Image 1 (cartoon, one colour):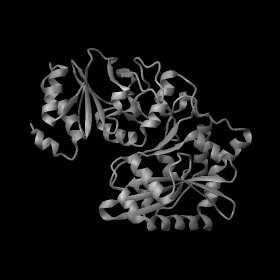
Image 2 (cartoon, rainbow, N blue to C red; image 1 turned 90 degrees about the vertical axis):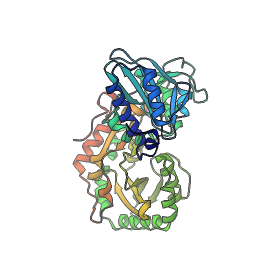
Image 3 (cartoon, rainbow, N blue to C red; image 1 turned 180 degrees about the horizontal axis):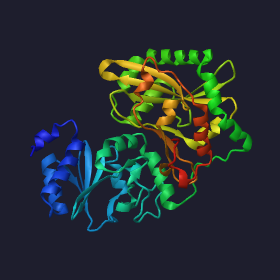
Image 4 (spheres, rainbow, N blue to C red; image 1 turned 30 degrees about the vertical axis):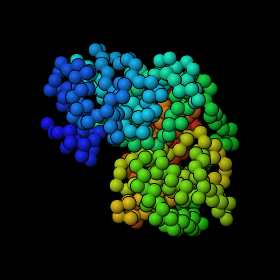
Amino acid sequence: MATSSRRSRTEDPVGSVVAYLQDYAEGHPECSKDEIARATAQEFGLTKERSVYFRPEFALRFSTASGSSFSNVVLSLSALQRYDHTPFIVCVVRPAGVQLLLANTTFLRKISHSSHRLAIDNIRGSFLGHDIVRDHGCLTNESQNFTALFEIHGQHTWDENLERLVIETNAIAATGVRFTPSQTQIFHIIAAPRRALALSTHHQYCELRTELNQLVLANRSAILQAARIDNVNLRGNAIEQIVTQSGNFHSVEDASRTLQMGTEVKIDIKTKVLTLASSPKAYNIDKTLRVLSNANTVVAFLFIGVEPGRDLVKTCLVSIFDRTILEATRVQFHWAGRNSRGVTQLAGDLRVLFEPNFVELVDVARAQRFLQRLVHLRPSNASDRDA
């Protein structure tokens, strides 16, 4: 078995501790929670703080369950806040082995125990085992998906998750209001892909693409420096601020351009580290539908691809209805909370956007079917996507 010093030098500490926990449980089938905790702490040089074992790269909470259910108290929300910036792994020790769950705030449904006074300014209560989601969109909460899941978690701030948990826990009215479009607005929404298609080859849109590319390249050094920030949320915000020269407003668009032809282009800036797999947030569905209900508006992503090791910066301005983008779009209803259609997330390898021969292509019929689903989205069909 590897020594703790060798473990500490590994490039994948989370993967190493996951493998160790699974191997230890297999080799010690009768081990108790305390036994596996002590062995893991020694192997990885972990510090214990109350019930949590941690090091800079991750935190662990050990628990037990005798049956198929897991309803134990795991941790208080206030304690989780201290570790939420790293993968927070719950190791459930069962007679048949261990179950590993990622329990950062993004993957909690609500706060259950002693949480009746939970509020934004009053963090209290604990979460139970059954409050941890077992599926997040198309990803199951299992060890093989921890890297992808934590990448998703990194795109949500503590404040965003706290607000959602307060709403879900207290069953109070959501701060956001579900957009209920009129028939005229629905007409404009469903017509949005045709607007995007007509714009995709227009010289004014091509000029905007060139303008934005030049703006990004003019700030290349600052962007490459910001790209070295480990936290994906802070990294994206920093690059967005560099490009827009303003703060982060968390609306549909980070920038807006009105073309001479009268079309308003809402631009959402997305950062993509070209050497990393990622599943970035796309857009809030209700906010985007509201924007698209304007007859003269389109929404596009400005992807900024960075590779700090090669001092490489690339850009791609592309419609949210582009075929590649639409294929990668997943609806995440469960994260957004009550009275909302939810948010979307981009999954898969998007590096094709930065290839020299990439061309924006809008399949109008498919995009319109997708929009119809979004307009009529309910919790029961929120996981649907265009096939």
